[in-house]
Length: 305
Image (cartoon, rainbow, N blue to C red; front, top):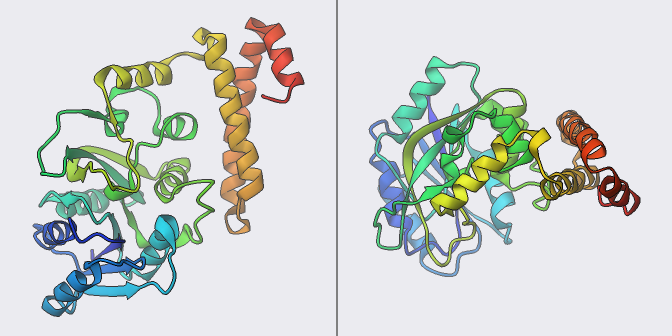
C-alpha cells in the first residue's frame, strides 16, 4: 500500500522540524508528504523548502494564495494526495515510529475498513509526557457503539490521529461548512454511519498541548472523564429532567443546523443522519412526555425542543 501524508501548516516553525523528522523516521516509509501552507509569515516555508531539497521525491509543497483556515486547508491537502492510504497530520505533534506500520497492517487485514483513528500520548511544550485523561479514552471505557457516541455525545476522533483510504477521502469532498462539522468530526460521522470506522486504543502520536494550538480541549480530569462516561452510559429511562431537555435541545439544534447548512453533494448522508437524529429525538421525547409532562409541554410550546 502506498501512502500519503496530508499536512497543513500555518506559522509552525517552532515544532515543525520535530514533526517532519518523526514522519521520515517511520519503520515503514511514507511515499509522499503533501503540505498546504496557509500564508505563514514565519520561517515555516523556508523549513519546508529545506526538507524538499533533501527529499525532492517525497515533499510536495503548496503555498495557498489566500487563507483557507483549517477545514478547507485540510480539504485541499487531502484532495492533492495521490496514494491509497492518506494520513492526516498536524504541524505541532510527533508520530510514534511504528504509526504507519501499525495502521497499514490494520487496513490490510480489514478490507472493509475505510477510516482508522487512534489514541494518543499527551506532551507539553517541552515534550514531557503528561499523565492525563483524554477524549481518546472514551471508546475503551464505554459499552456504547461508536456511532451512538459520535452522533449524540462526543467526537473522540481527532484529525491528527486519522488515516483513511483515498477512495473514502474522495467521497468526503467537498467538506460541509465549518459551522456544521469540523473536518475530523465529518470524517468520523460518515465512516461510523456505514460501520467503516475503527478506533485503535494504541497511542500512535504524541499530541502536543501548547498555548498557541488552534484546536484543543482533549484533556479532562479523571473525575470529569468519568462524568462524561456516566452520561453516555446512562439509560434514557434514568435521565432526570435536566439531562433529558438538554439532550433534546442539542438534537434539535443539530437537526436545524443540518437543514440549514447541508450540501447537495452529500444529500444521502444528511438524510440518513437526520433519520438517526429524529429516531433518537422521538425515543427520548416519549420518555419526557411520560415523566415530565408539564415541562415537556412548556418546552414544546416555546419551541426549545
